[in-house]
Length: 577
Image 1 (cartoon, rainbow, N blue to C red):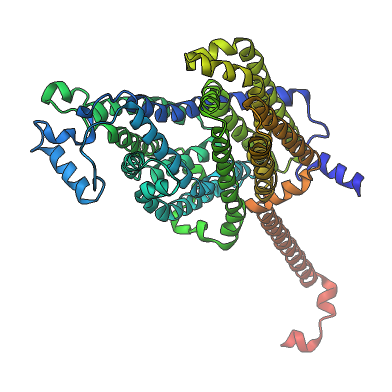
Image 2: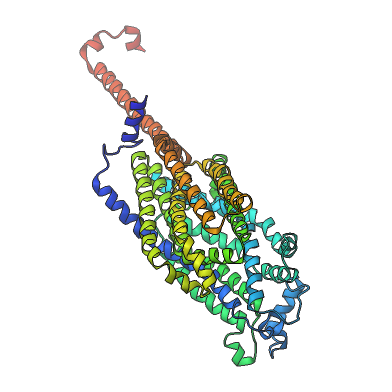
């Protein structure tokens, strides 16, 4: 059985070379890089938009630029007055305190709390676009290109439906934060800020769906250009909505102040998918080859919905557990004191290049390429791509870590100039880099490779049964039971990440790649299509054989009629008839 399974792995489910040529790795590496670097730029731009909001909020120095300052401008009787009146009517500015006394510290804290709450709330529906990289790449590999559009249609439909109840909770961020024990004034500011973020989650989710749909087809540069443009657009909108922009000099309008940052983010993240859709669908028509007509309602077919839910629903738990792990770890580290949390935040900012862009990029690229070969029915190449992706992720992260470590003091000095924070931040940098190296390997394996294999339940189990108890549990024991210092806590986290990396590598080594390739082709309907084609070919051959038989019979009958013997032997009754 083992030999037969190994032969099947070598042969694949379609005609495949006996051995993967050396040029395969070189060509695949080029493909990964050409597809991946625009995605990396896109991720940086997306994170940059949120950073811009914080930067503008952090420069609000007086109440003169607060959200209610618009009422004192010369435009109070114009369009802005109508807009503000409409906003008041819908309750966005209900119970807003017009008093002074807030500064950058309060605004940054409130914006941070609002972002923390809203980011947790929007996580579950995002599971419905997390599987698109695997599903669309499998569809392209299997040759069932229209299935790529079917997966996108289902993703956008279920994401929208699941977001509707979530957005209602944005209006209750203030009481939620009060229940968690935060300062009442900060909760009030954060609740107001969160209300103005209610507009962007659904358009932002659509944009992610469209981006994942095209990037799984290898089309990544349009999204990169779009993100670069809107990084600048968001900065411009922040300048206008927070401080008034040119209108401050033209007509004395000082902007919306604090809530202007939320308004600018809602505007930019709502316009971004619109412009992307106009270019990719209306102008370029890049979707035509992979888009089934909506009238066909392929997104409602039972087998498609079942396959989509099997891939997507388990990831809701994965995303929730990962969010819990991240927030719980932060709160536990905060128990070590202000210096500990400041040092942790400083190292996080210094290593953003690894956590913010490289990890999700490598995870998605690996998932796309593995999914493509599984859909194509080439399990051996899929396994080789998986190994290549893991090696690439570990190698790039390792090289960056080696370059960063000798300059840790200088890098931390860029983030903060407080010596009391710099010393512990530099001391934990080696543990942070080891943790990041292992975490990127885990991310590539789980979010990329194992997800493309169709084993999203395994990924959820690893989050629930491994990360949650070991990562959070070990940190809690060290903090509360052993009163450990910050350095010990970070080395413990690095050890847990290394252990999890070892576990996922063992899981991949024991994978039945041939079985996953069969599942991928069945999920995309490739096997059914091949069966139908074989049946049609068989019918054609039967028809041709029947026609040949009929022609042969007709020719025999004709020869018999013209033969003298046949005329002699013809019965009289038939001849006379």
